Image (cartoon, rainbow, N blue to C red; front, side):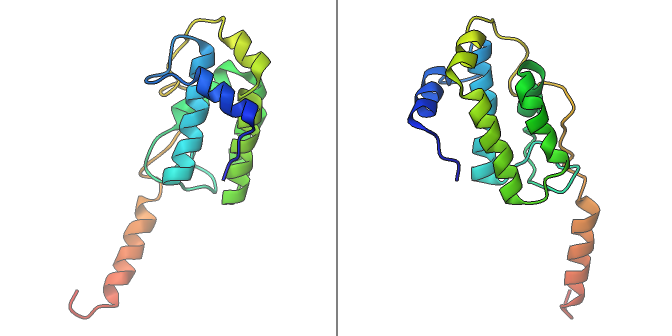
Length: 151
């Protein structure tokens, strides 16, 4: 589980809007980060399932794309999805993203910039294909049906 420092908790509380992605790039950054973290720890969702991490059916790639586009320091971290092969590796990505985004100086600078794009639906290099593993699931269920003489 991702543990935040007291300072990171305070920054998150200060910049996370009650709804939507806020009015500044600081609120958008925190919204995008929280979306990625929340969806992983609550639903097992990943922001790009074209590599080793399959994830579930919720498309959160827009949040990763927003961070990638607006905060250059997140780019090498987000690109680690191409090589990550385990839950622990994915959690390291989230930890490193948290350490970059929940930084007082960065958020103060981003808070001076007006909202840009959509922290939930930004286009970019990451994507989620809900049909990517459909054939594998069909094969699994077909094999499973053979185990039952009444099926």
